[in-house]
Amino acid sequence: MKFDRFAQWLANWTGRPWSFGVALLLILVWGVSGPLFDFNDTWQLVINTSTTIITFLMVFLIQNTQNRDNDELHIKIDELLRTTRRAHKALLDLEDMDPAQLHALRKQYQRMGERSDDGQTTDEDARD
Image 1 (cartoon, rainbow, N blue to C red):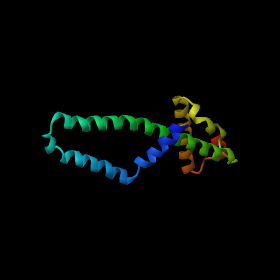
Image 2 (image 1 turned 120 degrees about the vertical axis):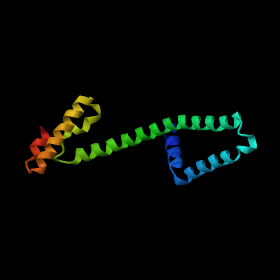
Image 3 (image 1 turned 45 degrees about the vertical axis):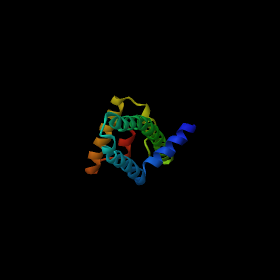
Image 4 (image 1 turned 180 degrees about the horizontal axis):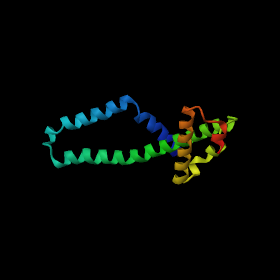
């Protein structure tokens, strides 16, 4: 559980405009320091290694926050569907459907959307 809190905190921290400014400043300092180090291999290795490690770790951080946000959104939508009297209750378990089932359901809703443009959609269409 502590990783989740840390990941959320770090994602919030790195998602701020000033953190971009800090990163940009570090890159500028690195670039300006090039002549001091004669643009040697070690100078280049520092930025390459640093950015590679940061990118690698950020992938997991971003995935963690995306998973958390996705779970929260699913719970909220499930609650809205649960409390809506005319909602199609099968939509509560969309994440358990395979891609073919999702595609078929999407097609069904597209057809309902086309019929509603013509004024032909009924509540029965959503229950089919």
